[in-house]
Length: 518
Image (cartoon, rainbow, N blue to C red; front, side, top):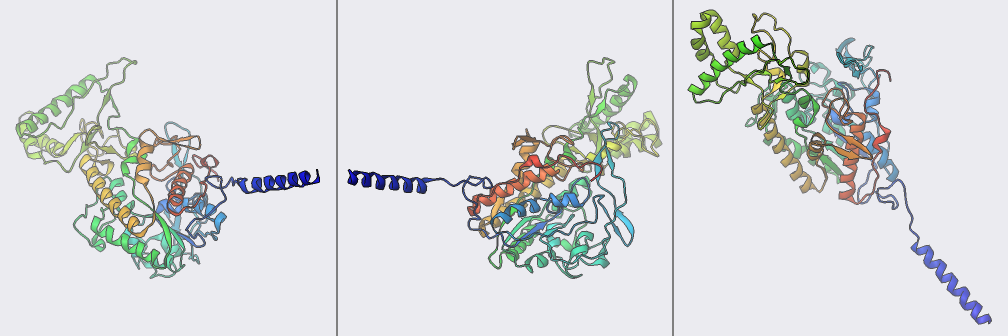
């Protein structure tokens, strides 16, 4: 009997031991419930490089609360759980946004949503208190510089106070280690063990947001000769990007990089439709159709596609909605001014015919299918207004007076932007693969946001302006929720590459829009 009791006791001990060994330890802070790990990554010294998207820019400005929600700051919070160190940011002085240079306001306050349908956006009250010439002492982990293009990260004049207004960037001037420092140099000097890099957006974005007023510099590999709104040559971009990554990885640091979304994924380009003009009074529609029909006859004679659609008149039926396309100027078209002038001189007289010829020589109606055009968000304020100095009836902007180049991104300009973006993205992914870096396909994410939306943590992210969760009120930069989504995508890529199991931030903890008062 005693032997049996001893035997049963030994069995019970064995059972307990097995139960202890088989017990699963879970961690609510990890993505998979297992104990948190950094995998093969070392997050002890994390540095983030990039532009406004890295800095936390939102609602048309940089301000404290926006910087706190920057995706690198959200990453750093998660890195801290697995050995990540402190993360410093060159904070602005207030939540008004904007800044002063030498006491003069040089950049205005952030935007807020008023709720007023006739004027939904307005700058917050207050005067910017951030003085650019009040230099901050670093180093700083968040090296995001609003406005930076790829090659700016290598420029030793980008932080020189003497160059404000020309070759220097006021945001970098404020926290550069010296007047001859480079963004890359200040980052590398911190000897990072891990980095994030999201750069290249502005290499095409400024061209697009200016309506293509810059120059496509493809074929010119010297960025020193570029204007502020030019497209960076893809070969120059690849060389610069490689140099940046080589510098960051020279001491064995691991990192994560992201590619460039198409600009046409953001509400700055997709909010204003190409056909916002309501049905016109019958007489006005008939008059324009006669004029545009005559120009279409000219293009047909010349063997060119017709440039104008038939204008629809208001049918006075509240149950129907007539829409007419915007009249835009397209500098890629052959100039028909001479042909139009000659054709209309008998009916209008030489002076008026010459005016109409010059006005419509490169005009056409905007297209929203196929190789489509994009109307800039900022164009809302000019559509339907009266053009100063233009005689009636040729003076209604977008109807009888063509929208100018700075208000539209035409199909041909869009094609240039897309081609450059594709080339940049090819280089980014190739370099990431060669260096063994984590890669975020931001282009695919933003394309999904713009086409049906992305569901995350119970929230739907779309590119709908104001209410879509993903974007802020400037139509380009993410909202607080949008930055949280981006942080999740970065963490997913880091986990996949380095075997970490970090859990991304809950997007539900972040606002959709900032209020007027913070």
